[in-house]
Every structure is written in structure tokens, then in C-alpha cells.
Length: 234
Image 1 (cartoon, rainbow, N blue to C red):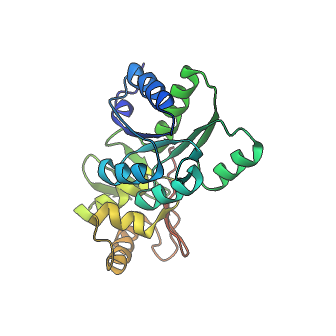
Image 2: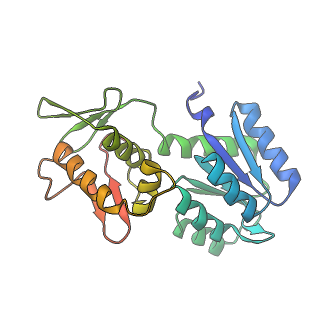
């Protein structure tokens, strides 16, 4: 049975070969994906990512105006969505570099259409949980359906901004989300000047979800980078 909520996720394909773009788009759309956009180079990919806010990118490495590794870094600055490399570069060093930079998967051309679909679905399942789940943390639960925290039989409401921040952290559960990434998701394009506000919101969230907010075990600070949410029921 297909995960219908995953088929609505926005996917960005980047490859300089028109035939590959058309083929991969066709494979995904035939399976049921409804939001697939394409770009032939880094410049168009960045423009498309800022406009469409993709939730998964499938990248080639060799591009006319640079390489996929650099593009991945640029895309991660826009939003910390998952990356799948689909490329003819099959050397181990290329694979290791891709994974070292934070890629979620790596497929070497030529590939089987079914393998591509299954890997895309696997990444999306890991990265995006079904809407409004009850999320189990170490000492509390998040009820996204009601925007509440459940801790020691107490119901604690979340503010709208706390809900937004926890949502972006949960979509990337177990992974680091940069400070800029959280600010952009929560406040939009005007991210500068919101770091102190973010820290204040993080402090209040910890008071609601942690047993000891001074020694957090669920909402972790990664010094110099950002924050990570540790979820128990992934």
C-alpha cells in the first residue's frame, strides 16, 4: 500500500541531461508523486529551491556550472531537506564524499526504476512522519494534533512559534538543524536578528518537554551548529 502523504512531498531533480530529467520525472509521476520540479544547473536549482521549498532533492554530481556536492551545501542552507545523489560517478571516493557531506543516499547510473522509487520512499519515510503523530520523547510526548506536550500526566499547551520550531526539528529528528535553518522555517526570509528569540523559545520548549531543562536529553544543542531533537519512537 502506498504512503499517500509521502506522494505529496515536493521533489527537486537536478541533472544537465534532459533525457534523465524526463525519465526520472516520468518514473516518479507514474508511481504517484505529484510535485516534481526540475533544474539543469546549479543556478536554476537554487532559484527553484527558494521558490518551491522542496522536501527532497535528487542531484547529479557533474553539472555545467559546478558540482552536486557544492550544490548540496547551498541547498542545505536554504532548508535542511534530504538529498539523494543519482549520478554516473560510481567511485568509492565520490560515494564517501557524498555521505560525509550529509547525503541520505547514493545511486549510480544506470539504475532500476523500482530501486529509485523504493529509495526515495525510504528517505521520505525516515525524514517525514505521518501528520499529527504522538511523538515519544525521553520524558514527555508531543501531540502535534492538539499542539500540546504531555508530561507526568500534565497537559502543557504549545504556542504557535513553539509548535513551528518543534515541527521543523521533528521533521529532521536525529539530525542537526542549523540555527539559520530553524529561523528561516519559523520566521521566513528575514532570519537575521532572530537568534536570541530562537534561544528564548528553545528554553521555553525545554521547560515543557524536559525533566531537567538545564540538562536536556531530548532537545540537544550542537555547539556552533544548531539543535537536534532525539525521538524515542522512530
